[in-house]
Image (cartoon, rainbow, N blue to C red; front, side, top):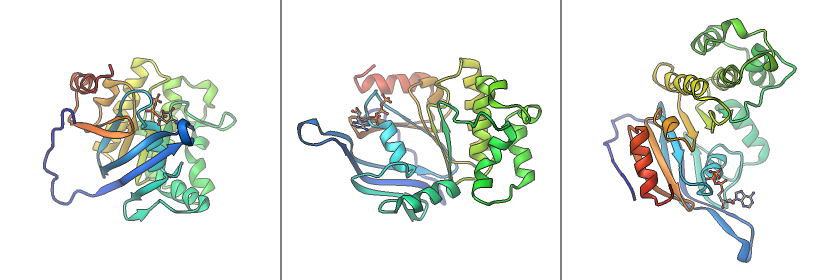
Amino acid sequence: MVELVSTPRPAGVRTAVTARNLVKVYGRGNAAVRALDGVDVSFEAGRFTAIMGPSGSGKSTLMHCLAGLDAADSGTVHLGGTELTGRSDRELTRLRRDRIGFVFQAFNLLPTLTAEANVLLGLELAGREPDRAWFDTVVAALGLRDRLRHKPAELSGGQQQRVACARALVARPDVVFADEPTGNLDSRAGAEVLGFLRTSVRDLGQTVIMVTHDPVAASYADRVVLLADGRLAGQVERPTADSVLTALKNLGNV
Ligand SMILES: Nc1ncnc2c1ncn2[C@@H]1O[C@H](COP(=O)(O)OP(=O)(O)OP(=O)(O)O)[C@@H](O)[C@H]1O
């Protein structure tokens, strides 16, 4: 284990997502890869956690299993008090729709819809009425008020990712999963998106779990969880870009 700084958990901290002894194997026989090799990890509600590790260490696989996008071979995942493991695709689709927000590297906006329609699409598909006051809060926090009538092609990459963040938050999900959210952005636009994710945790009480390769991006989080070879390899509390880089170097892979 590297840089394992443990801080006492304040009383009353809720756990948003928990994985226990998670195992995921791709392929069979000699070609089998243990992408997750018994991962035990918890993510506290109301905190911003980054998942880091070398290429191939299992970050995406872990995130997909935590978010109910992929099924582990064994072990359990709980979203709050709800067990995700063993559920049908239909139940998982509903759980994701109702309780999880996603921000992907490639934005994944619908090109024919305006920014506003993209933000509200998930609620519409779920048959839920938007809370207009909350919509306004999220749109204002992301600086999107004068961009709502634009289509994605008329927006910069940073603006498109801010629309994706608004779409993730507008349904007040239990947790937002962000997969390399700044991977397609320049450093200024990336800093804006990370600053917003940080604000959504601090001011709006959101829970964010982000996969990233970038120690600077990880420094916006409250905690960094490190993976190596499909296993938990340590964590860094109150990370800085330097402390994250040191922790990664101590894994022997940078
Ligand atoms: N669909 C798949 N079929 C076979 N092997 C896979 C599949 N998906 C992932 N793997 C393997 O599982 C391991 C973990 O992959 P994963 O994508 O979770 O790592 P990662 O840490 O997200 O990597 P990166 O930082 O490069 O995106 C790797 O060895 C990868 O080659």
